[in-house]
Image 1: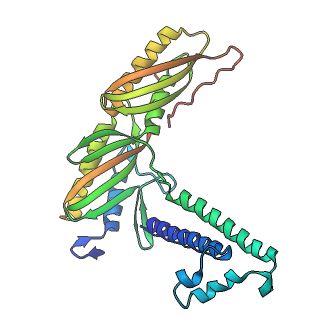
Image 2: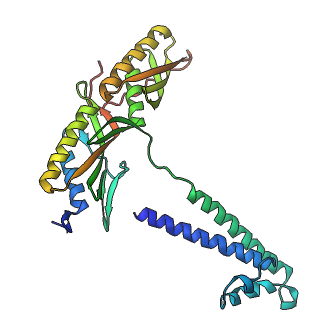
Image 3: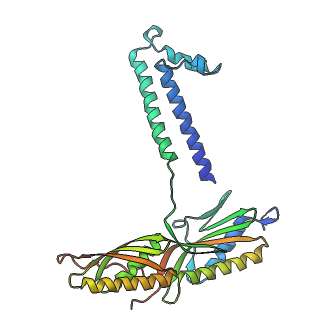
Length: 201
Length: 114
């Protein structure tokens, strides 16, 4: 609630800055007449900005300084406003595990990735794995990249990894796996064994 | 007990949920550093639990860190958690619970490597 209030406050502040600096810029360069646009007595505050000329004791540098400050404020306010208006999604991507009349159970993608990587890492020959999870209408689709040891048989290992991941994820999540796309990389012989850390506590 | 009209304050409900969940094995509510959900009021905040009161009743959201073993699964643990929360809230208030959403923030494994 407070966040929404703060955000609205910031948006109003930035809008005020944008309109203020824009108006001042237009007034200074003579494109806007405050007596026509701003109601009395407020135009009296802005009218002096229309007279920043040598006749009134102002130098060109003074005028350029005002214009420069207005341009900088205008640019800054536009950038900040755009940044503030961008939809900021802090929500962590989630996957729906179960949905019924009592509510919904969701799991963060990260927790499922950890689960998959952990299961893959338990197989001998798998050095490292990274996973992308996609929730489709047919079930969960997993895209795994595994780094295998040079001595391992990729075909055999790949099948073993797929079977293990499928049975584990289906057991732990109670959701069917629609597909597992496995991409294997053979670790270079020079690289030392880099065993993934199982998330066992 | 702090009350709002005929209803119990959301803070009381959120704290009761927190207490309920902490009594269930294999689950815990993430703390301030990890939680994304919270119930906020003037001068207080209960992390990991969201209590929203609407005209039809209460909508509850709970964030969980689940510890899995070879026999357990997320749906079975979640069912247990939701049932316990529902029972405990009903002892506290007669207000209708519309839904209880659970969000599994993290999974921890309590397994020995085979």
